[in-house]
Amino acid sequence: MEIHYHEFSVVKRGNTDDEYEDAFKGDESSGRFAVADGATGSAFAKEWARHLVEQFVESWYCDPDEWWTRWLPGIQQRWTSSFVGRALTWHGEVKLQQEGACATFLGVTLAVRQEPPCTWQAVAVGDSCVFHTRDARLICAFPVDNSADFGNAPPLVRSLALPRAGGVDWVKKKDDGRAEPGDHLWIMTDALAQWCLKEHEDGSQPWLSMERFLSSSMTDEERRRDFGLWVEELRNRDVDENSLRNDDVTLLAITL
Image (cartoon, rainbow, N blue to C red; front, side, top):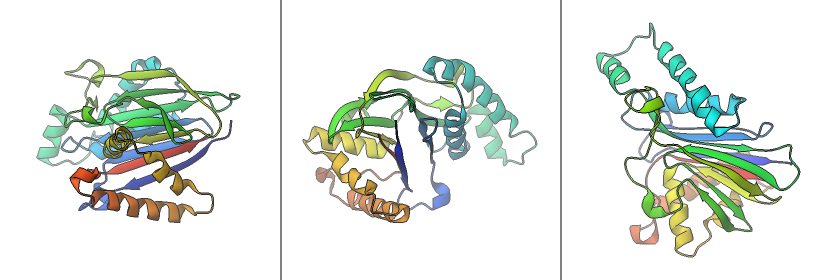
């Protein structure tokens, strides 16, 4: 089954590109896609987020249960080892040892070699989301399906295994996704996900706004430029018009 994939990112207003703490990666050939949102204030958050998405997409593990039991301990060990001999500030050393790095995470696996309908699985920790739409109608929202459920302390994947067992606060899994040709999967970090759900709850179709960035007549540079302008427009809205919260924004758009 053919996949068309585009990626978009916009840094938090007022920050530089170096301060972008989301991470993303996708591979159409394997059907593996992931986003992570580094927790501000934790040690080396953006690097940890990048490690998580890279390991998920490059891994051959597909089963969500295997993903946490077989993969996460290894990356935690490699992460810790990567700091051996590295010059850190006293403050950075303390944070690394006592708190570690933290990030929300969402990974999606598509059965790309399957005849339609295409099955898909997802595993999530925190409030990064995937939305499955068909003809601009929402089929599924995972792991959050209500805009009021976003908060300031989402579950996190942690570089330290303790004090929480395995270094994961709370894992959600979905293994029954079924997509038809022409469907979209929208994978995104929390600020945009919350905005989309609020628009949907108010009777709008936010997916139509995003579909225009997938036009075959646009270059990748044009897509990303126009997406950035759109994000700024949403941030400039009044609160009662459902403005977009000022945060890093990441979107992976998959068309089947």
